[in-house]
Length: 296
Ligand SMILES: [Zn+2]
Image (tube, rainbow, N blue to C red; front, side, top):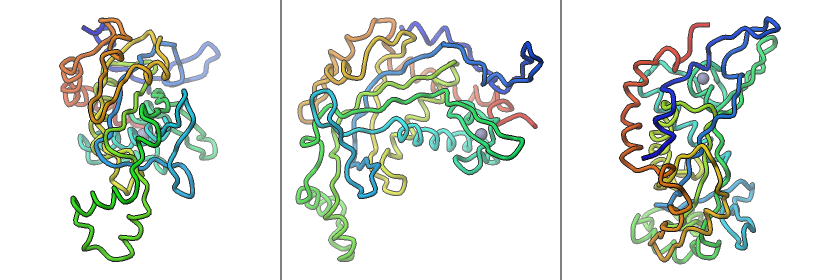
């Protein structure tokens, strides 16, 4: 049984106002303590993907821990999470209209979790993100991870009948370099000042984000499957240890060593996570006003 989950309070009201010693009124979101949980696991690509931060659309690769690896930046991953989280909140309240980056309300759950900025005169406000997603690197090297063009061409024709598309479209497909399914990315996500609601939202958010994909927004590429292995308040493992602890052969992922990096009370089972995730609708109902933002 995971030791951290039962210790978390159900929900935190980050919009509650406090009066500081100097008489200043401050919302709770600005009062930080050092409490955090680290959620650790790995993601497996289920579909072709393209992770690029470059103008020339070249793949994001970096020499890291002895290999040239594909990387998925923490910022990109967090942006996908934020959009998924927004969509979940909208599902439970059609009028919810906080949207990043153009209309951050600064008083809803998403703004208190992922941060925000307004820069209107006399109303300048900035909230730091409580959710920190670190950059993930592929277990496999770039040669094993990137699919070559003729191979992709064959698969596309076989699976998607791209042959019926126009010549132009074909040409652009042929030029694509993509990451192949089966590439594994260990990750560490940290939530500061966590509550049980955050974990419930996180589980639902990851489920949704995995299905929507981590490629560029329009591409619908990069769907993933996430396995959450541990939730801990005592982060002792590093990204490089995680990379060393996963063995991948073909499509078989051996996470035996990965799991043994954690104490039994840090490991978290699928059932424990599902229990928390299933509480989400009730928790949203119960804390509705605070989740969607109090009246100004
Ligand atoms: Zn908001």
